Amino acid sequence: MSVIEKQKKIVKEFQEMTDWEHRYKSIIERGKQLEQMPESFKVDENLVKGCQSRVWIFAKLNPDNTIRFFADSEAMIVRGLVAVLLQVYSNEKPDEILSSPPTFIKELGFEGNLSPSRANGLYSMVKQIQFYATAFQALVASQTKN
Image 1 (tube, rainbow, N blue to C red):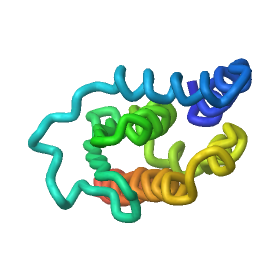
Image 2: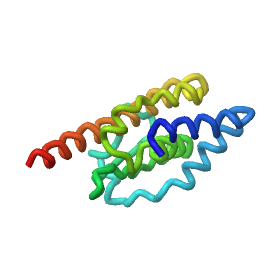
Image 3: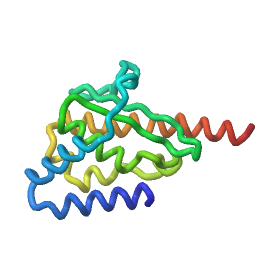
Image 4: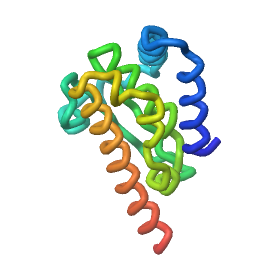
């Protein structure tokens, strides 16, 4: 499933929920189901800048040139938001991540239903994911040339 298809699937799931109370519960539940991030990855260099809560994102390049993301947050709603992002972007190739803008965030209504600081933090998390994708894209390109 492509990044765009994953985005559409999540939008459809959230649109089927009748109100924001159910959506918040779903976000929190996704956070609870997020794979535990190894403590060794919870270091300052993996902290996402621009988030009100502490959020860590770490990525590694898989042998098939897809990126596996690890993330965590101390705040349950933020942990859920980062879980949604990982559901979309983890185990995808850098080119796919970079060519699939996060338009689904607006479609989900997160901007209007999260506090401004949480919405800004969400975009900071997206920027961090895109930063990793850009770095790994360059790495893969340099390995291909050699």
